[in-house]
Amino acid sequence: MARLYNVYMLFALVIFASLIRVEALLCYARDYDQDVSRGGCTTERIKVKACLGKCPSKEIPIDHYPFFWNDCKCCTPTAQTYVSVELNCNTGKITVKVPSATHCACQNCGRF
Image (cartoon, rainbow, N blue to C red):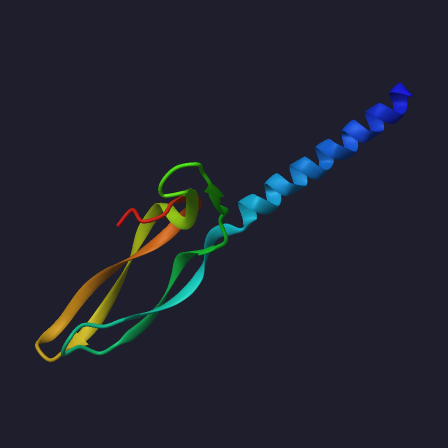
């Protein structure tokens, strides 16, 4: 009986660890083609990293106004670098720095 219990516990641990790994992979920095433009300048397409993926969210009923409590997470950058791009403009050349995510995580939404 103890042996069967150990097998079940090991199985539960493997499933739990797999779910944690899957959750971590749902939100991460992925390649993204970004068009960069300014008025009077050419448009250049560059490769950056964007935070893309899914994060958990929930809305739970409560017994008082507003009668629902929510906890929503968004896939957002926790670290970033900058990619420089040179644009040809009517008045000469300019350099624009575009943020590129290096690490992403599920965080509270609406931080902007």
